[in-house]
Length: 78
Picture 1 (cartoon, rainbow, N blue to C red):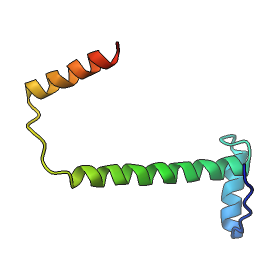
Picture 2 (picture 1 turned 45 degrees about the horizontal axis):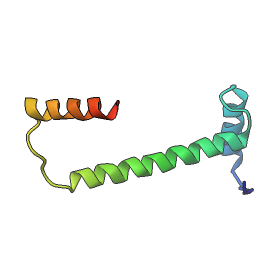
Picture 3 (picture 1 turned 90 degrees about the horizontal axis):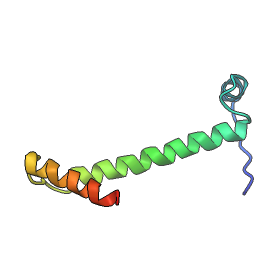
């Protein structure tokens, strides 16, 4: 694991300390790591949304479509 030092304005340092003090996080490092993970996940989700939006139209979502999804789920559980 690597170490990174950051400089925060007093108001942000106080916010981090409040989050740690409230019992949600054990250390300030844990809090910052969680923020970075959430940012990473948000960017991945945004990329997936953009990919889906630009992929073109799919077929109709009718009864046959949903039945094929159910069949895929049943197959993947085995």
